[in-house]
Image (cartoon, rainbow, N blue to C red; front, top):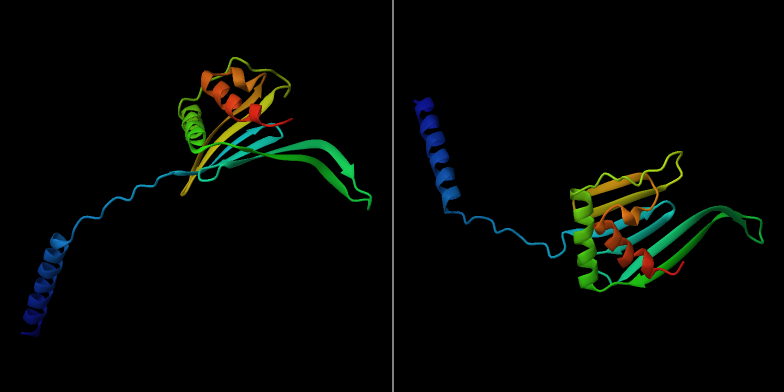
Length: 160
């Protein structure tokens, strides 16, 4: 008898929980205005960070040379700079970066003996990142029209 009551209770519970799921409204999808946080472009020792939500972008170049301060400390020489891109320019760069990654172009600008440039384009999102890279390229801005546009919108804005 107790087993029958238990089975009836379990059956009623399952029916009740199934009917409550039917009455629930479906979850609305949230749209993220900017699905990315950063666009990073690295060419050899030069790095540009482009944030999704701020106008100020960052540039850094490391040198192989070591500087020695007056105190005798050894430091790697680094140049840093900032430049401004408006939201439309940043969105355009993101789309160009996305195109560069998704439609990777095999380059015929390859050079040997590690003489060329090493380029990495990375799109960082809120839950992951995607990137593409080129090794030993004679001139990365000539690999494709997309990379040429990225170069013009970023590195040409920086004072070298």
